[in-house]
Amino acid sequence: MKAPVDDRLAALRGSAKRRPYNARSLAALENNPRCTLRALLDASGSDKAAIAEHAGYPSPFGQSAFAFARGNTFEAMVKDNGCAELLRVLRETLKLTLPEVAYRDLNDVGGDGRNETRRDHTAEVLLQAAQGTGDGTLFDHPMLYLEVGGQEAFLEPDLVAFRIDGRFYIVEIKSFPIIDGQADPAQVRSATTQACAYVIALRALLEEAGIGPEAVSDTIVLVAPKDFTNRPTAAFVDARKQVSALTRQLARIERISDLVDLLPEGLTFDLDIDKDNKRPRRPAEELAEALEQVPATYRPDCLNHCEMAFYCRARARAEASLDVLGPAVREQLGGIDTVTMALGLARGQLTPTADQSDMAAALRHAARLRAELTGEVGGAA
Ligand code: SF4
Image (spheres, protein in one colour):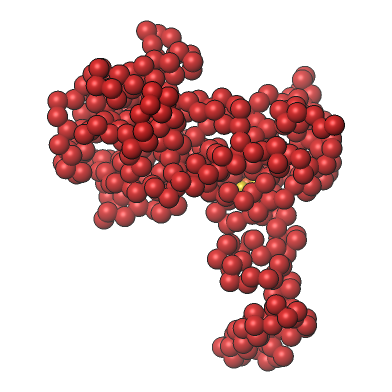
């Protein structure tokens, strides 16, 4: 008989301390929903950065100290004086008719900053506001909460939730610039996906009091520096699709036992850390073998959001997987699994199956065109 799923997840993590879910790890579920390796590493609370490093692929993941400091300075400026600058932006840039504003700082409760205390206080204050029995329009640092696959996830937003016309909105304050009304799409997507976790958590909180999901907007308010100045501007970002996708992925985590059941008995990502010198004792090759037992669906944008990205990219390259070229190419080349196979068909060195014949003809044609353009001889058969 198989052990309960919690025990098997604990065995995957091994002796390491459990790393709880946070908004970033939840957002990553939406970024690469097909990835079994990521789902299992997160569900087991494994330390992805330490595992990647020990496998030989340390990741320079995370913000630089300079970017971190700049982000903190910008956020502090926007929130100074009870969010005075944020209010100006909401009123002037987004034309919101916010009335007299009551500002509530939910950072701690009378000096008690424990997660559980803050979560309960946040719940009380936001429920009162939703039910019209409490004050508050702007809520700074609410502590939200979700149960994910049976594990607690405290979501501590750097953000503000505000309530207008009976609806809550989530504000994300970021330090990347909005230049001529445009921002880097990858950064916007990353910011709004995290905000989606807050939308879902806030909806879950209100749902307990019988308040429907429409009470929390899935339009995110993004606040960021305008052009090359330090002056904030704001934009609405429609996050409906991302909220739906993340909701589906959270439901998938609830069914993590389906994935765990497919793993070989005894599989673990344990690094066997030596307590004295804090170094892993497990041979790196053995860890690599364990990782290879689990399917990973590498995509180029993994580099933006996952600590395992260099490891997975190397693995996909070694397997000549089409994944290294991204989902658009993979979809285009349906029925073809590897770069080697695609090149073999393009060069006429492989005989296509019946399913591959159309694609093989297209690849040979593309190879001929390329050969003509580059002056190569014999680019295709
Ligand atoms: S980097 Fe690897 S583990 Fe992380 S999401 Fe991408 S494929 Fe999955």
